[in-house]
Length: 255
Image 1 (cartoon, rainbow, N blue to C red):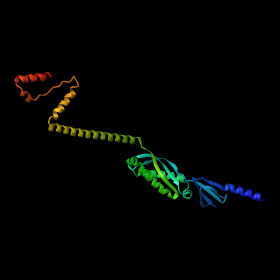
Image 2 (image 1 turned 30 degrees about the vertical axis):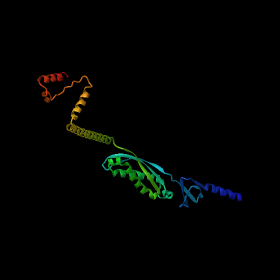
Image 3 (image 1 turned 135 degrees about the horizontal axis):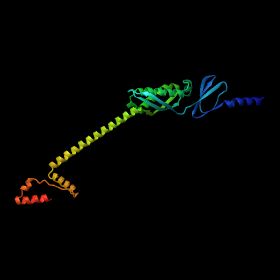
């Protein structure tokens, strides 16, 4: 008789032992009502009277499918994202929402479309991180009653229509041309200022113009095919008498 009792107890107890892993929590029901949260380890769940559900509390990544949305300035774009979240209350994730994975995904899609519709295309392209934070806050607030903490939202890709891509490319090219013209104009202004300063220096410093002339002659004389013509002031010729002046003119002409 005792052996029969032991066999019956073992038969009942062995199936009643349930293992909860470290990264899991168990939601236990007694007679259909929530009774407790099962922590990691071996736990007893009595058949017929009790049941349980395991909940994975590790961080999960949800790939939000590509969504088509219209920006504030009426530009149609396609955008997708990835959401990272974890469960901080296992009981709420089971009791407060039917399927938290599906619910988070649907909420993320709706929130993405709403946020994209509230900004212009330029803001969407230039302030992606700011929009990600905004989407994260909205989803986190909505999922808090479900026992879910949204840790991060990353916008993966933003697709534009081909015609819009061409418009943006033309605008970027025009901007580059504008910067090139501005840079060239600045260089010309600096060059003219330096030339004016050099002219002023040569006019004020005695002998500066002659030194510059000699330097130029030295540069030209490196090429034997160049012919140098000197313009001699009349004052120099008048310093000579008639015959001497003719000799000087002949020498200059020969050179």
